[in-house]
Image 1: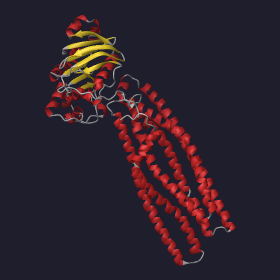
Image 2 (image 1 turned 135 degrees about the horizontal axis):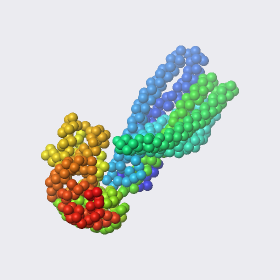
Image 3 (image 1 turned 60 degrees about the vertical axis):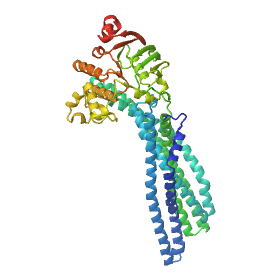
Image 4 (image 1 turned 180 degrees about the vertical axis):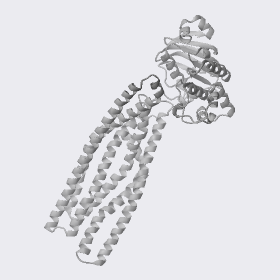
Amino acid sequence: MPDGGLTGAHVLRRTLRGQRRRVVAASLLGMAHQGCEALVPVVIGLVVDEAVATGSTSALLRWLLVLGVLFLVLSTCYRTAARITDGAGEHAAHRLRLDLGARVLDPRGGADKGRLPGALTAVATGDAARVGAVAAALSYAVAALAGLAISAVALLRISVPLGLLILLGVPPLLWLGHVISRPLERRSEVEQERAAQASGVAADLVAGLRVLKGIGAEDSAEARYRRTSGASLHAALRAARSRAWHDGAILALTGVFIALIGLVGAHLAIRGSITVGQLVAAVGLAQYLLGPFQMLTYVNGEFALGRASADRIADVLSSPPAVGDGNGRLPEPLPGGLRLRGLTHGTLRGVDADIAPGSLVGVVSKDPAAAHDLLLCLGREVDPAEGAVELDGVPLSALDPGTARRAVLVAHHDAALFESSLLDNVRAGREHTDEHLALALSASTADDVARHLPEGAETLLAERGRSLSGGQRQRVALARALAADPPVLVVHDPTTAVDTVTESRIALRLRELRQGRTTLLVTTSPALLAGTDRVLVLDGGTVTGDGSHPELVASDETYRAVVLA
């Protein structure tokens, strides 16, 4: 659902709250792992002082046993923490994908405005994975800080100057790391934006591949994708350079810091302030510190990438809805009478019309844009700027969008099919009797399509139904709309790719199947219009003609020009 005012920071906090238990468990195990690792050089220092320096075999065996236990604990904790951490990242990304899916599928719409389908897919995959990685990285950060704290305590016990060096030096180092990560965050956001755009263009071109080949526009399409992909590549290279510079700078800072710790420890050993074993422990701790610092570098980079992706996710989740909610109620049973009162939207200018319940009405528009705007209003994909569409006296804008669309089903001309069987495409997830499906298939002549497929109606269709011809896809899409059997059905140009004989059969059977239920045919097909009760003519954004098909052919010049041309 839309979440107005949502920001990337809110997305990150919500994601982390949702994985709190996993993050806490992984953090505790990570702290145990890092603590054991930090203690290894301390124990080795004790071996030097209490066993090697004294020649004590019992002390050597005792401390070797302690080392064995430390390695057993740290390896077990590491494996378990890694499993939980990866699970936290995957669960977080999954939760985000569900949220994004729910927003995109929200009946009120709006999430796809200004975004290509491929771009939305990129947000739901790449960006969701990056934000999920933040949940995984947080436990690494806690473990790394725990390792630093334990090292500081151990060094304080060895030497106060060494301990203070870490305690006072780590905060500025972390702050510098945050400052260095800012360019990476900015460039990562651009990279993801360009990559999403490239994915969107690619999906768009693949979807229209047949059309592009048919009109010989392959070169133009290739050039368009090259430009988009080149911009994505340039942004990715800039982000990669930023990542390399970020990691290199952090590594250099930590290397200098660790070398400083080693030099201070060596100086103290030369002065006799610490023993040889303590020097070994201090040097070992200094080398160990490289691990937590590298981990913090990784975490810092993941947070920078995650913040950029969280902003993009927040943009989608907070997209304003195209239409508002409604709590109106429809009468039961629903007669299906439509009334357009001063309908104004886009190219429509004060459209007035009354459509009786159970009638079959044609709508002819001289301007395709006016037909498109009318379909948007009837399907409540938009609310009109002025006027209203009323269903049995109830304005569609007063209804919940889902309720409105169940009552008034708009079957668009470019309705897509899914990668499933022909029969599953017609069912569209609903429960239908075999008799009802057979009637829908027959009325749309999709039963003829099924008879010519290898496995009949159970034949698996290719993506978007590309294994069928254009006319076959139209017939299957019409069958799906008829099988839904809504009180009001609005069909847009259902037979533009169908031969005239089949079109005439569809016109006759459609009228029989929809007998007693309201049906609007937004079309310029003479065969379909000839079977309607009446036809409305739209010209200049308003109704200029109203009558039967024969009457309008005889009296309306605009109608003749559009329908009989």
